[in-house]
Image (cartoon, rainbow over all chains, first blue to last red; front, side):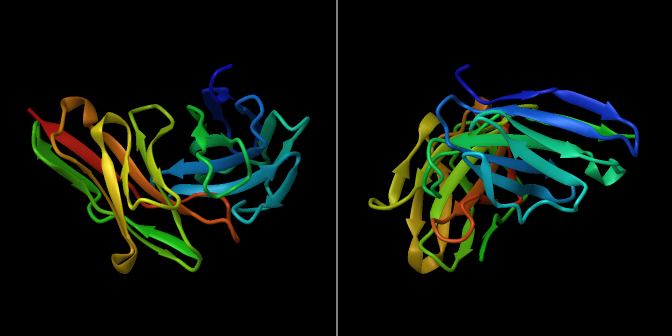
Length: 115
Length: 114
């Protein structure tokens, strides 16, 4: 596709369940980023991939959060044993190269609600 | 370490008036600076960015921003607001050493009154 896509667009889950969020970056983009947007915390960085490796996982809030990227393309963010404070919009972005000056292109986000 | 401060969580202007959204940054390395816009229920769209070179940067939809190193500022302006400019605006900083990801400000919601 032409842009970054994310699925599902909305996800409602019960506290304690696991969820998987998917990101399809722009074709050929080597860097991929996950961010979280919530009312209380604003836009927070979670994790960054360069190819299939994650040089920076410093934003992951707890060990319940993990992410992987396969084939240098699709990425999955997994949240285990979800808590109500995990409710947020999860945004994925990609850039052509892993450089701070590169433009990051954002997907529409996945809105997660934990009941 | 990097940080961004956006003064004013809400700004209201009349249609046709000047738009000024303020952004100050802190960075221990030469910064790369970005302004993104977010329309309701959408992702973020890049308005403009400063990396190196000319300090006055022009972006889409008539917006521009000036990098002022001495003031550590990167304010966003538009001479004449349109109703379609109503959205949330985020200033962000990144660098090529340390964190490559964007560090965002808390955002400014722009309202445009008819």
